[in-house]
Image 1 (tube, chains in turn blue, brown):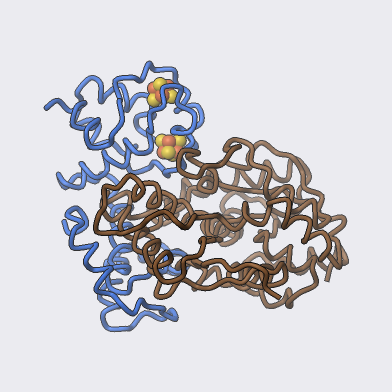
Image 2: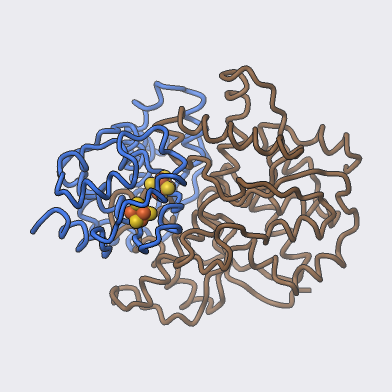
Length: 174
Length: 285
Ligand code: SF4
Ligand code: SF4
């Protein structure tokens, strides 16, 4: 299967429909920080540039704001395509923006252990500890297990149901 | 006296750093005759992380809540947090396609975001009657962010590029709500953890554009937007040598204030940018 076919099948989208109108990139708030703009990413998929795409910073910098998806004249859900690319990159252990990957994984770890998260709390903590907190992020699941987090924790009673969902999530386990 | 009952999904942030959004959402609903019943044993919807990492988690975590609400309460769900709202809508749409038999959901109940729910004409009429102290002279911009409206296939929002729900509510309570072109621009959301430099740029632009049209404060409906705009203001002032003083409100806080319910000091203490000096200067306390 070609890279284009694989992306289409997994995302349910039709990336070959992109005719390079730039509309997605013009409205993208994070364009200034990306290595490939969203329309370029679509073109690279069409051209079978698997390595360039999965190793790009763009797929991790995308803020999932859905502006591109809302505006694409060909109805391509670009944000969903990028979600798919992130998942493919994860499967192959690619993740050019290590800190962003680390954050998402730590976030989900807290949900696995508690059924609930403290996303904004994590952000506030990050502010207090500045850069060093990135190292500490990996500690979160450990702290949760030992009930050592200083937030007031609220927790789901029936954690079994939540864990069952995680067990089916092959990529989270990676 | 409550006239209708709704299932309430607070979500994780409303139980932690966005407590003031939870508090004022409950106050405002009670005053408008809406009884909120928390979904029993609700769990995290996966927020901005699950869909980046795993497609099954992205649907499953939200789906579990829908099943609980339908089975145990049988009431429509209202969600204050924009990010949770969008995740529950994704789950709703996916479950109705019938591809997840492990989550038995019949679609008898619907998912609403609190902002759009309260902006319905019926509730705006009620709100108008309940206003005790119109917030005259307060100049604000309504900031919707991304996930209340986009993508419209998920949110079913009729005006994803120019929503007016919050504008209408703010005008009803007497706020001078100014038009601006950045109401649905992105604040950077969870990029704040890995790449705060990007969030600084995006948020600074929002401050700039809000001030350009003469706003003295920004009103939000999303805990992630609130966190990025409120928590980062001091940092941004230091980094860019600016001196922004732009309090960031939840729309429910201003509604409660105008209806004269609760104590503003209670919710204001959760803000890093203290809104009380502005409200005092405007004679609104
Ligand atoms: S908006 Fe759609 S068609 Fe236009 S460049 Fe972007 S992906 Fe391609
Ligand atoms: S969803 Fe991602 S790529 Fe699309 S406009 Fe938003 S940040 Fe850019």
